[in-house]
Image 1 (cartoon, rainbow over the protein chains, first blue to last red):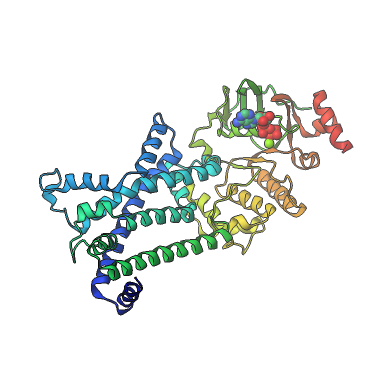
Image 2 (image 1 turned 180 degrees about the vertical axis):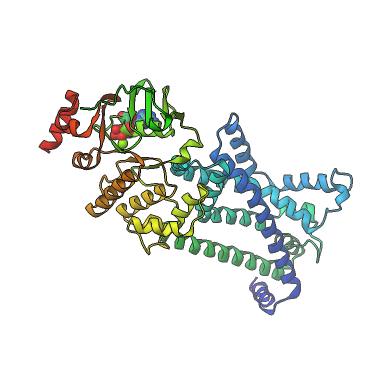
Amino acid sequence: MGDALHLAGQLVLSGDPDLWEIVLLSLRVSLIATLIACIIGLAIGSLLAVSRFRGRSAVLVVINALMGLPPVVVGLIVYLNLSRSGPLGFLGLLYTPTAMIIAQTILITPIIAALSRQILEDLNHEYAEQFRSFGLSRIGQMKALLWDGRFALLTVALAGFGRAVAEVGAVIIVGGNIDHLTRVMTTAIALETSKGDLPLALALGMILLTIALVVNGFVQSVRSTATRAAYA
Amino acid sequence: MRDFVDMPDARTRHEQGLTLSGISLSRNGTTLLNDITCALPPSGITAVMGPNGAGKSLLLRVAHGLIDADQGLVLWQGDAVTEEARKAQAMVFQKPVLLRRSVEANVDFALKVAGIRHPSLRDALLNRVGLKGRNKQPARLLSGGEQQRLALARALATNPKLLFLDEPTASLDPTSARMIEDILREERDAGTKIVLVTHDVPQARRLADDVLFLTSGQLHCHQDAASFFQTPDSPEAARFLAGHILN
Ligand SMILES: Nc1ncnc2c1ncn2[C@@H]1O[C@H](COP(=O)(O)OP(=O)(O)O)[C@@H](O)[C@H]1O
Ligand SMILES: [Mg+2]
């Protein structure tokens, strides 16, 4: 175990190209998924925050339920759609990073939508009368809420990214953990651990943890700066 | 002594100010506004007075179209207050609702919503409310008085024809209160119709041209200010004024 840790440290410090290829692919896939999920999720969240319609509470229940989607189920559904015989099989996306991005996007969009809806609705509670007095359109209202909620929403994006980058069940099904193509940190850890190659697994684990800490620290410091200016 | 309550409506639209007819509002079985009818002149400052809980804030919201009354009609210069019509009006709330942005961004927001592109206007407005050079400061870190002045600047940004204010100087420092009163006079003189909720009797004496007095959702009188403060039409108003003079 001590040896394994030592070797893991060496791997990280020596800049092992295989290791960094895996790390960079992980980051690329999860960042793109987070970006797409934010675009869709924030649109849904802000629309729900300013809208009242019949069946709204049912929509909220569904979105909240989707937050808890099991990754393997998402992986399976995406797999069925992208497999050669599936409806989107002609795209040839199975076992590509794009397939992993799709799966992660589906997984975290409900999280972004549900969490942002709550934040923006609270904010709207405070602003609604003033907006009405301005004669602001619904789109204008959504835009203003998104901007004024920007620091709280950063935390939401972080929650989405955290779930995406740490997730293994969906990406292993649709990505296949193919070396130099779709191998990401989590799938590599799972594989190397089962093969008994603990140093590489540990090295990746340390990097994953470090990424989580750094991103969290960054968001924390941005938010506390914003709080001091009463912007959050 | 002028009496506004039953003004005939055979006038051109422009001569018609703000008309409330038969406004009633209740919530959970409680009547909050009871059949309020009045015609406010198209210019000047109307003070809305009455004790706490009288329904002054509710009446203002109904008049501005933020709340729909259960019954009755609000007309501004002969027209219903639609979403579009509201853009020619503005309201300053008792507790200013400032965006989580800088001072200047708050004014810019109002200008943008109104589709006004006029770069020097914002600074002129900030200057007018005594916030010159404070452009980049976070709006929500201003003092209470400064926040209320910023809310006023933002309300004036769209050059409203009808301006509602809900106790804008309650609990403000004298300097801020004074500054706001001065601006309200200037606006009135420039032809803006102002409806001001206040329970500050000296302030109403200084500013008001006419006075609406209500208690418990009931409109007791609508009088020319001079006569209201001398001989109010209703015993409730007389008691209210006496109480404030005693205090
Ligand atoms: N949304 C509401 N639902 C129920 N009661 C309300 C609501 N808004 C105000 N009220 C009640 O209406 C009365 C008048 O309120 P308000 O207009 O704020 O009085 P004020 O004259 O002090 O401004 C108060 O008794 C208040 O509790
Ligand atoms: Mg009030």
